[in-house]
Image (cartoon, rainbow over all chains, first blue to last red; front, side, top):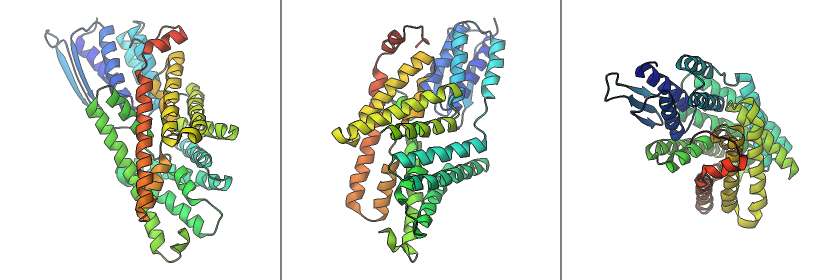
Length: 259
Length: 147
């Protein structure tokens, strides 16, 4: 039997990875609890927020210990969530001792995200398809594919430079809108609004919204509120980006054709 | 309709890849998304966008939970992959567009509609999550993660 400190560290590290990849609060709490139970710790307390983990174990005994962890809001990585889920199942089934668990956790953490090129390509495909199903023509879809790819490249670059999320969203949606307006101005037969709707799909806070609803539903009001604010502000940024470009287009000469 | 189904599937598939879903589950993510989009399209003329969204989300979440029980993976995986067609991206666009155009009447209409759709999605997920886990376990008749 390993000491409580090591077990607690393992459990919190697993929870940390899960939270970072976009797992819901109750899932993180549940996972940590199950792992601690599986390794025979009975006296524990866990409090998880959307950007932090607080945990203590065996506080009333000799080997009492506690951990506070700050977890910044990260990128959603569904693959890691699935992998950690599998790992925690095995731990609960007692088929995995602490040492193997550490190795498995390390493996889970190293699951790669899609490479930049793949990400750009699929972002383009996704945008184009959404443009099409929301009523765009094939022409629109083609242009949206192009915009989607460039948009993803833009987002990846900005992420690397660690620019603020607000600026990224405003610039991203402004870029798509500007592109579509240029096409319109060139006299091409495009449905400008459909291109924008398809193009902003990667920015729309769908995941933040669903996570926040699920957190609220599970009674984690604080975490739910954090994600909800995140979703609302992102939506607002998109609106600002789109709106500013339309205003700009209307104020420069030649913008009359928009109406 | 069939074209819509496949295009939507491709769209959801791309977004699943974008969020690094495991390769084996990508197709199921796409399937949940496409099926719920079709549900939305079928219902929309009959009951209006908001109710259609509510039922489509309900359908989506139930479907995700069934897949999650069968494949023993987290529900989030399928839910996140499939929610994209329903999220009111166009609502956000039109709302801000009419606001900028100073068309306050249309702004209010679109804004309210977007807000209602977001609420409908929320309610749909909540209702479907409220179904006890046992129902899904029994339907697949397998041992499932301890809840």
